[in-house]
Amino acid sequence: MSGVLRYANESELLACPRGSGTKLGWGTPPGAVDLAISTARFNRVLDYAPHDMTVTAGASVTIAQLQSTLAEHRQRLALDPLWPERATVGGVVATNDSGALRLRYGGVRDLILGVTVALADGTIAASGGKVVKNVAGYDLPKLMTGALGTLGVITRAVFRLHPLPESSRTLSFAFVDSKAANDFILAVADSQVVPTGLQMRTGADGSINVDIRIDGIAAGIAAQVESVCKLAGKASASEPEGDPWQAREQLWSSAGSACIFKLSVLPTQLASTVEFVRGSLGGSSAWRLLMYSHGLAWLCAEAGEGMRVIDFLAKLRAFLSRTGGSAVLLQAPAELRQKVDVWGEAGSALALMTRIKQQFDPRGILNRARFVGGI
Image (cartoon, rainbow, N blue to C red; front, side):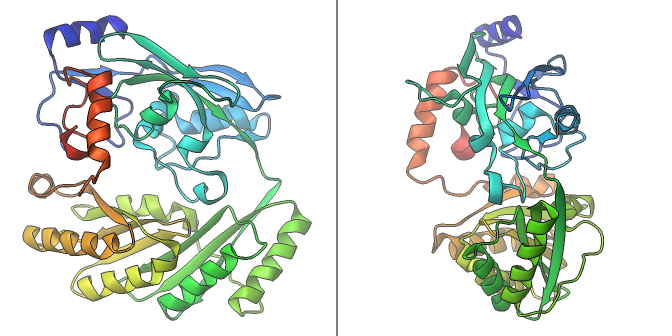
C-alpha cells in the first residue's frame, strides 16, 4: 500500500481507494481515476480485548463479520450502517455511515478510538489507541471519518464496544398527521424512556408511523413500554410488520432510477419538513421519507424530469437552511448528478477543509474533487 501510494504521488496519478464499493456513488462523481487502490487484503480482526471492550479491525472486514466475532462475547459495535454484509470497516468510517442506533450510542466519531492511514505520499500514520485520552495535533480518527478517502487510505481502525442487550422490543404507532407524530417523538425524547431507535416513516400514500425500539432486560422493557404507550395516549402499541429498522435499506432496494437525499433536520422540524415535501411533491411523484429523532432523514423520490429535481433540491435546501439544516444528494441518475451540486454550500468551513486537504494530500491525488467544494 505504502509503495503504491508513493509511486502514484510521484507520478501524479489520480487514485481512488476502494473497499467493497457499496458507497462509491456517494459524493461528487470523480472527474478521472488513474488508479484504483483496493483494501481487500486488510480483511482480519487484528486484536479483540473483550474485557477492555475494544477491537482493532482491518479496513476490509465487513461489519457483519465483525459483529459475528463480537457476538461470541455478547458484545457489539453499536453501529447500524447500510448493507452490513458488504459494508467494510474502512468504508463505514470514510462515509460516516450510521443509522437509528446513533440516537443512543452516537455515530462513528463517537465510537472510533484510533486509526491507521496510508497518506498520499506513502507515509503510514497512526493516531489514537485502545483507550480514550487527549492528544496533541490532528485528531486523525475524526478527520478520516466522513472524508470519503480524500485525506488518506484507511487500513485499520480501533473501536469501543457495547454489550449486546439481553432483550429488545420494537413498537409502532400510527398517526393521522405529522405534527402529532413529531410531538410524540419530542415527548419520548424529553421523558425517562431510553430508546435505541426512534424514527418516523411517511410517504406519498399518506401513512405516518413512528417506531421505537427499547433494549434491556425484560422487566425494564415492560416498564418503558408502559410509559411509551401513555405518552402516545394509547393503551397499547402494535407490533410492526417486518423489520422497520430496515427501512433505510429499502429506500435503496426499491429506488431504481430515483433520487435519494440525506437531510439534516432539527428534531423540532420533523413535521414541517414532512409537510414541505408533501407540498412540493404532493401526489405527482412517488416519495418516501424516513426521519430519525436525532435529526438525520432520508428522502427517496422519483427522479422525473431533471430540471424539476434541480428546482426541488434548491427549494429544499433553502427551506432547511432557515433552521441550520442541509440536504445532500446521495443517489441520482448519472446525467442528473453532472448538472447539480450534490453537496450544497460548504459555508465558512470550506477554507479550513481546503487547508487540511493541502496538508495531507498536496498534489490532490486521492479522490480528487469527490468531497464538498471540489476537494
